[in-house]
View 1 (cartoon, rainbow, N blue to C red):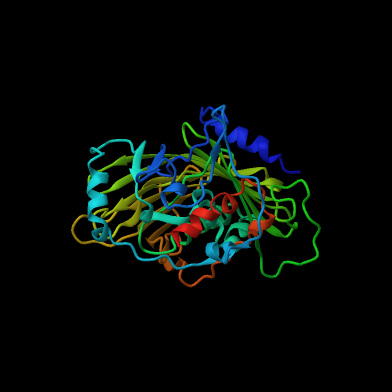
View 2: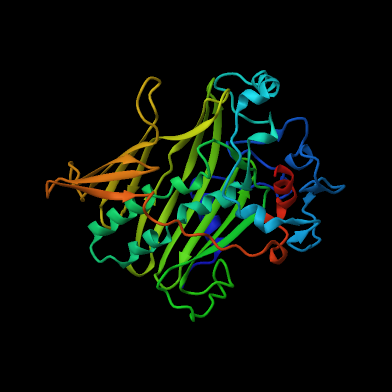
Length: 401
């Protein structure tokens, strides 16, 4: 019923004219675009005096250590390290000399390729795992397929999309996830309340040990130059999927770092032969000399070619003087209409309200602080394959603790 994962990745990366590179290029690339080394080393693993994540053979090809060990080893519970929600606060003022050295390498407008970055700015997980947080509210996602009216469906797509960003940040402080190596994968799933527990497994699905009543997720680093991540989610019973690819490019902006997310995602309703195409906002790391924080900015389009419904979303950056962080607005249009039937405004990290123009009514659209975040379920590291994210980076994660 669903297309093979490999074919989906191929379609995603070639649609935008991207070309996959040789698998020998497996050096971690910056999640902000391009390769980025950690201060004083060539890999982030050695920078914190732990075992290297990738070993290079005589031909120049790299390989991930293949030995399997217990998830609890040398007194360290590696699985527990990834489950910790709290990240230590980060103040750049305590690392003045290192920041001065970092700034000496860059110029305004420079692409952050081959720039040496210190380990203390790292978040303890892979970029591929961070993408899974788009589905921290899986109930909002699968509800799209349950609605009969196309107008209700485009509204629900926007509700899920606008609620998808807040869960990706574990703290208010901006930190950078690990750079995935080429071929690295991350797999997980979510249990949906109210779903039965005796459904059969989807053996040919993206996560073959998961059931038909679970939302499954698979991400893979499919290119090194340029750095492209592809990810896919599906709920078998609800006949809904999401396919996406993202190429991240970054620039130094003086006191900020700008991240341009190039690519798109597609929500597919299989039974309706209906697609909702979405793009992604830019990201900005602000106040990099003091306490860095992240915000989103830029225009996003959500459209359904089959029904003609579409939405324009604007992520607003904070003004230099005054104003609030994390502001967002959105307008949703019926086919061929020039005026929206609903306007949405608020904060993507909090409350968003909807004004229905045909009803002259304003109500809560979604409040992300009042809806539950569903915990993603990940296999124990001891059961993971050698290129799965948590296994690849477990020593780095332990070293950063």
